[in-house]
Amino acid sequence: MGRALADRGEAVPAIAYLERAAEAGDAEARADLAQLIAERAVYWLDRLGESGDEGAQAAADMLRALIKTPPDNVKA
Image 1: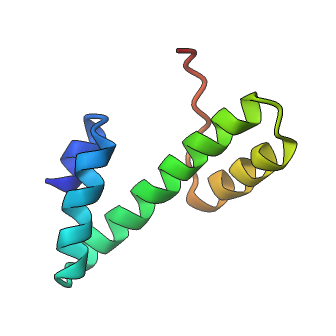
Image 2: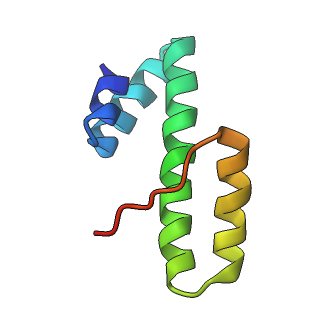
Image 3: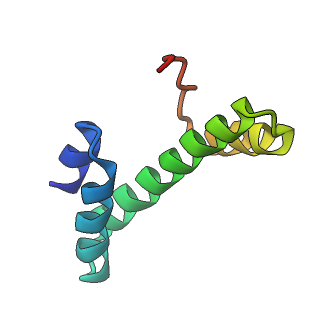
């Protein structure tokens, strides 16, 4: 359920759902939660990088390489 929410772009409810499942000992939920939080961190670091913060862009690039997430090239 948590991964399905995340796949639909509903990160906040997905995180809440996955946290409850992870705290209850669900290993798959723990993995999904870690992946989702890392993906959200990359997203926000990219946004900060767009604001001119070079350190944030470097951090996003490093984290993206670790979790193998492609860059978000969609312009809002």
